[in-house]
Image (tube, rainbow over all chains, first blue to last red; front, side):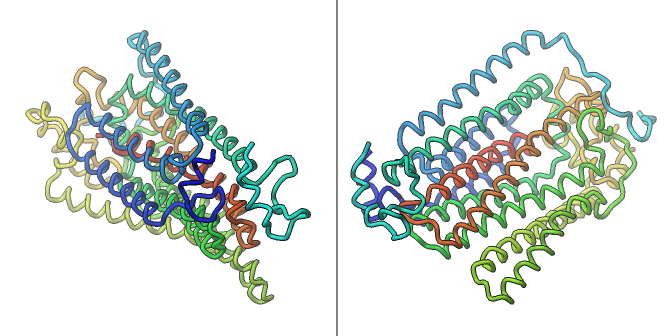
Length: 123
Length: 364
């Protein structure tokens, strides 16, 4: 644990105040990436769109986790605990999607919604 | 477990019995051990939050993978500008929260109060914009499955402010009145510390209405731009105009008679070719719109954004608690755990929005 002491250098005990410069840099990167993800949605990327937007979102999430949530200077145990949740999320989503696609063709839209306010006449 | 923190905590702040920090629980050796324990606890809580939200992301992934055309169709009714604005607001609140943790660690009492006030204000503004988005959708009949009203050929809804908005804004309006009265009383009585709590709370309640006005302004600007666009080039914004080259050849004959409808109805800006499938080989827009597809999208939308908004409200409650403690000067370089923990929670709520925004708003 004492390796964390070396980092701050000042007399803040176990507190490691983040520098204002790094906080602002992270914030403006996040704003830029938000702009970027809005911009990429105007492009015609086809099926790559989902992957690109999720990739950008993951970069943003990493910035927030590493700097705003101080994981970069946190104890490894905390990082392992938190990041392990994503393994379980991946298992959860992966198995559910695999299962659902096994019987994809066996169901259809149900008529659960109300009818259009004006009957469809012009088509 | 560690001994290097003893040197600092024995210097103490004089409040405790034995030179301990006043908030050091007796079952901890030192402030650092207390902090580390709390930190592990909050990370575990965040794990449960991630898993909790993953249920909804699973519903989303499942439905989107099975019916991508529903998402392409229904996502057009979400206001991208407002979503992007709200993303910025939440990111800024995350910045002020992280800055607040720094202030707590450096014993900057006023700085911490200001940072917490900004975080609270941003949270309220987020909810104000959200209220505009929700009420606009309720007006249009963009409701969860079962209540969803098919959008195609729907009669234009009334313009102006939704009656729902008045109901939603009742609580923030009461908060404005209450906090204003509290603030004035505190100032009159000369209770400086109470005023330092009541002031930020008043600003927070007002920020909700700032969000509401920003939302209305963006929505009006967008409607005006859309109307102008439809006047010049009616096909430019329909579903296939921008993203599908395969349908350009048969595109223009069908939409001519709907131009007027579309121009008079800002909500159905993209619904011009209802009989064409969004994705080749998939159900037609009419089926998506009228047979339950879009309603399930909005079920997922309300569930995810609604639960997220509840988390914002919960975050505001604990931020208010921090604000009270910050004015009492409870936090210092040995005891900033509560600020740090709430910060971690707040950043997680921000993280979830970072994924929700592109997944819900930015589908083309």
